Length: 154
Image (cartoon, rainbow, N blue to C red; front, side):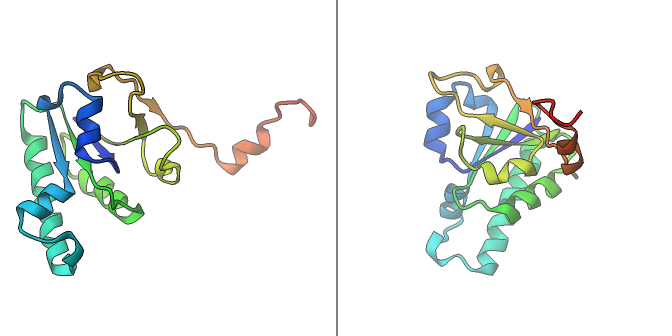
């Protein structure tokens, strides 16, 4: 099972994918509303309660047998939140990897935090299992010195 993190809202996810009944879609805004908080008035105490509820939903969803994956939507996600999700999911045995789900060319500053990046489909509604994910390979600085596309340093 994979955990997909996205900055886009639930309506965009519904427009792009068909088989969402097999996925747990967690929207931060819906969790905040369900718990009775106002997004503008979220303080550190209410933030803790919201985070614990989201963790509980991910933990319970990952233990379910009918779900294929989990999609987490949060438009206010940042570097710290992403790192916390990656760290939290390492303790969950059924979550294999955390994947960024985004538009091509957006949120590139977060690519290095993920094993894989998946882009929203451009043309039509598809099943998520039909999408191809490509692992991200980052070159270290020592690898860059070995690259000589023009053959000038031989």
